[in-house]
Picture 1 (tube, rainbow, N blue to C red):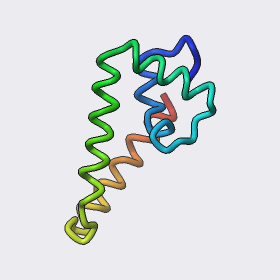
Picture 2: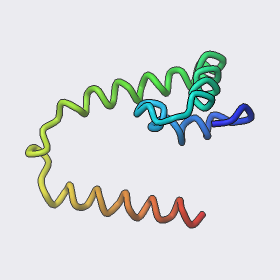
Picture 3: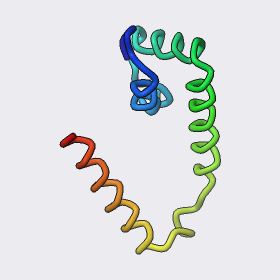
Length: 84
């Protein structure tokens, strides 16, 4: 993130923030945006809760066909994002 970034930029970089792979400067900009933007603060908390809750799911509980369909759907979506 840079100082002119928007809420959309924050959404796209939240994973990097949570994984701790942002530079110090990027992290400061991200955190400043969170402090100044209540909707983004809520979004960040929702992502944290989702990760926490999903972390408790057993992979064995997801049928293989469903897992494969989800991976294929994500890859198709991701290809569309890259070509846009």
